[in-house]
Length: 186
Image (tube, rainbow, N blue to C red; front, side):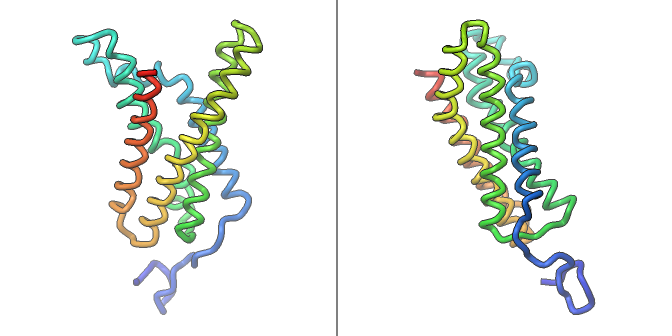
């Protein structure tokens, strides 16, 4: 594979393992996006606005099941895209997968913190219970789905074909939407 490297076609940045800063970038970017996503209804509702014409009861379900996964899944992996596209770093697929996991964990943790703080008016017990329940359920969900996206970024980097990211990203969106649907039904 001819790269943007030296005359003997060596890549500019040979594959290495992520450094501590790379892990922190992914965790921090995931947490930053999680903070913004915790206020997601303000941002997501306009995308589902046409549903209000048909049903007010269906509106929050459409936001949770369709809009939230479409917005959150790509956004969670902004740190990975920053490292790959802006910093031109090359890692093994397993490394991208781990970076994706950290991004999802940061996202889930910060989203849960904001939700727990939002219900603090109902008492510390309610706030702590919500944080722990979401920590057991949604934090792993975000970690798993962002892991899939990290795997897709690794496939993209390895193959040079950006379409290799699409299938893992779509699977992550389907898993996220299915989880939200189940949570909406229960």
